[in-house]
Image 1 (cartoon, one colour):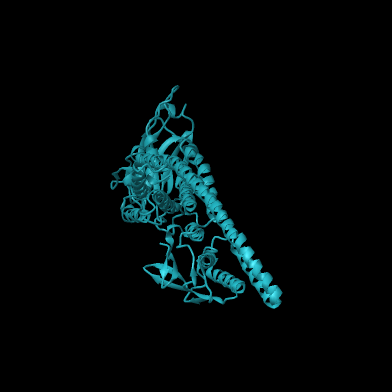
Image 2 (tube, rainbow, N blue to C red):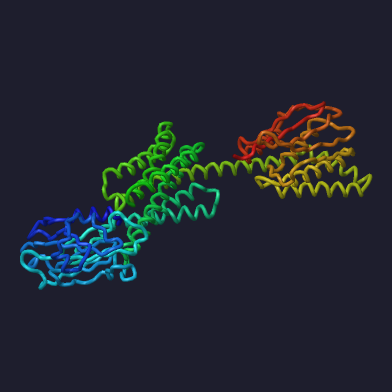
Length: 563
């Protein structure tokens, strides 16, 4: 629990809490003891240089202080309340005296750093029944604090007289509601971390894993003081860890929400959230307020994005905005927000974010399945175009003629045809191939056509990055279209080039003017196939344009650079 949380708990248990039967349960909170900063036990009891102060204004950092309080206990304190204890929660070592009798030490208080042995943050001292007097009793607490990492505003959280172990005992049940949320958060963190590990492009799963991971880490830091011996010098690192995890949770949640509901401006939202968090949270007094602002600022920024998306009726935006608004509202209504309600709110918010992410994953999976089905249709279309009856019939007729007239040339034609189909089979089921493979496929097709019509055909390539990725069959289909829509009596040389301008890359294929032009002006099945392939691979970032060019034909594939 943080400093503010401990103060609230100490305040709540101060005084006498009524029970339904029997005498009231004893709870005495030491609020304004007499404080001495010099002398020893005798000076604390009778020293003239002592003054009464609020316990939270007493500062034992870098010195020894003595707290003196006269405690009048009710009659039932020794008969019905059971064994009494003095509970001291402080970032200091301490020794407790009851009516001049030492009840024990928590660490070893000392006047110098090297003399002090750090004690526990929370310690309970047993008060022997025979030390308790009827009427007034004198309580003296010696404290020193030399081992804090940073100087804190309030080093003493509370001093309480209560039934022995009655204050320390409820800590585990106090955190139980928060700890119950840990299972949900850990499962979500593991599931989405595994999803991201299997697909590094899935940034949504990464953000869900980080968001829940920071929440789990903060819960672990919050409950840390209740497990094992938690000595007071560990309190400042613990409070820093809570504040950092709170800010990490808020920023990751903000990134997740804004990325989903404001995809074009999410970086701006996140930058605003990060700048405000870094600028304002460190200036807040006390670690509790730092931790609150670390989560509240980015969550509030995310709430703005979610509300705007809800007004546009974006799916899942309304419940997300409601969850974020509830998270923000809890800061104002629950004074123990960081101790308990924070984790319940995180769990509720995590459920909403996880459900939204699952919905997005389902949508993406459906789109992926549709894309795969479309890719399969394109692959079948590619093969259908290559094994069309008229192509096979004309090719086989030419092959028969060569085998009869010039068997050696017939063998070369068979090898060229086999090489073309082999390349085609290697790339047909892939979304993208290196343009070098596409060039090789075009060259084999032109070689087959050279044998088929006994005219020379070639592909001249200039300035093309052969590692460039393109969908399979696009250049091959454009070359094939030239033979579908024209006849070249004297052969032809196709020219492939590459240029860049305005952030886009352009592939240009120039087809020479045919001897006998046929029908077709870029509206056939071949052009539709190329455009479908480009859209499937690059979406709106790619396009195909065609136009007449000096009697021939110019095909231009534009590829916009990704943002």
